[in-house]
Image 1 (cartoon, rainbow, N blue to C red):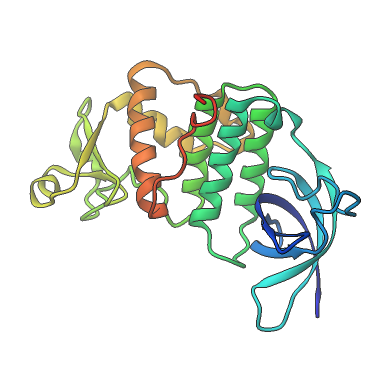
Image 2 (image 1 turned 135 degrees about the horizontal axis):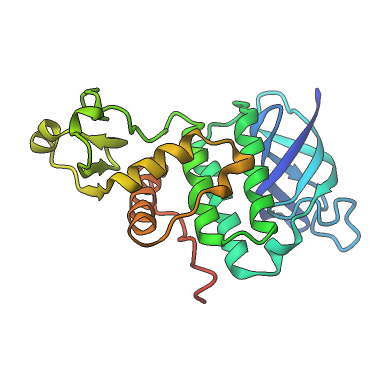
Length: 253
């Protein structure tokens, strides 16, 4: 069985058998992987807290022939993001990022930029940036690094340049189409549309362009914040194929 070594982020884990865990990771070198950690639930487990959600670790695992479930042999903690376990709002934001990556990335398809963006998103939450806005920004960025990048420069339905909307126009965002839709397509399609003001559209385009390290420099409130939260929530539900737990589901308990 080949030994794989890679930095990894734990996305989620669940109980398996009497003492084991099945853990889903997003790894730097191999993309999303699942592994079984034998004895991980025992009090004196060698894994300690390395397999807890949101922990970054240096991971060793063995690849089983003809099996997508690897065997975890070692996990050494690299970064823990302690605030994500102490504040419900931060925990909920981190959970949304992890759930989004779990839902929209294929298995064993490495994308180092997604790994780096997820790590930076957890760091930003851990440093105390406003949870709901930080989560919104990093969801936009993560979507932009996949095949689900929201289309803002041309019609998501027909490909027509959206600059023909005209200055000051309100764009119509279709979660089903995957971005802005031009007027002729609006009349031809039966999608549910969400309106994006020019300020919201400019904010979305800027968030897609910026690097994760400076993403939190963007600030949004009022109409822009409200419009983008509705649009991104609808789009995430569409691309994930299900409604993910809302960002504030823990904070409101």
